[in-house]
Amino acid sequence: MNAALRLRRALGDDARVTVVSCDPYMTYQPFLAETAAGSIAPAHVVVPLRRVLAGCTVIVGDVLRIEHARRTAIAATPASRQEGGTGEIELPYDEVVVACGSVSRTLPVPGLAETGIGFKTVEEAIGLRNHVLTQLDIASSTRDVEIRDAALTFVVVGGGFAGVGALGELEDMSRYATRHFHNVTAGDLRWVLVEAADRILPEVGAEVADRTLRELRRRNIDVRLSTRLESCEHSVARLSDGSRLPTRTVVWTAGVKPHPLVAACDLPRTGDGALRCDATLRLEGTAHAWAAGDAAAVPDLTAAEPGTLCAPSAQHAVRQARVLADNVVATLRGEPLTDYRHAHVGSVAPLGLHKGVASLYGRRLTGYPAWLMHRAFHLSQVPTLNRKSRVVADWLLAALVKREIVALGSLETPRAEFELAAGSDRRPDA
View 1: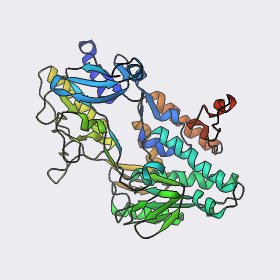
View 2 (view 1 turned 45 degrees about the vertical axis):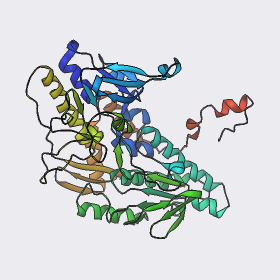
View 3 (view 1 turned 135 degrees about the vertical axis):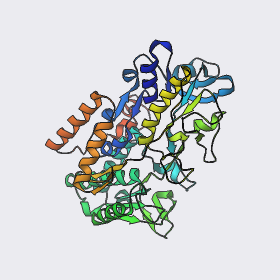
């Protein structure tokens, strides 16, 4: 979105900018944890592409592969799939920008594909919120000890900012929600964080990570370091330390990998499957092809150690997009290119209402100051004044009224009630 917007502004009517995206919006992922906790409305963390990218052609669909040898992208749209034939359309181009991002990096853990819940999209955040509240409903209405224990045990795998942020917000929300559930108390909840490394939050210094670890444990969150999830079949999470945890909830936030589209391109890749770029964001040894974001392996020129790559974060992706767009324009106009250079300014994450962790511009904070820094920093970064205003309105409203604790599980099966009325065998809770 940022690359297309900058290209459109720089080139005007001299070029046609086409954006192909599987969704008609861009998701501001740093707010997903607060969306899952109900502090921000889901519609307010997404930015409509057609509104922002005025003057660009926006195609909602999937790029299946890129045949750069003949400068053509092969895509499929909802319309093309219904028109017969192969369901594919060809999109010829002069310059291609591959910014397809990443997907969750999963491992061959038995039961993970069937029961695991990711945390990269707004749909997953909404689904996870509904799922957690539904587990409280189940626990409140059963006398079966095994069902109750599994419902009230929540396992989060991955101790980076995504995992710690999701865990912190959801644990805080669920603890508040127990006030309104019969036969369930905050002390009945069991939240477990599983991290394969010997520390959490590798994105920040050891001091902040240790303070965060102490804060999580003070809240009776069970943090298992140097531990791996070995299976999660039959509502039981088996860990490498020998533990068996009855649970109906396994949240997977253990890293990311380049989008599968990258493997379907005839473009240079690294051994890890990312697109190999030089410092100008151009694909190495490849004219007319550019990449940025999580799918791109971009050298970090500010790192002390040669060969270091930029971390897969929004902080780099947004800034890379600007340099990339400027370099595309420079190429078209025969001007010199600029190297991408950005020193990481740090990271911030929420841990619940009035709780957070931050390492930003050299300042390391936890607790309320870090929570304020998280909100201030990300409010300044979320695109468009429209979305900034809506997020602020959500925060103000949340400060004045009580939290919502309703699970809208029917969002995932919106036709179930109608199918029941029409005589289908499907139940509304299917």
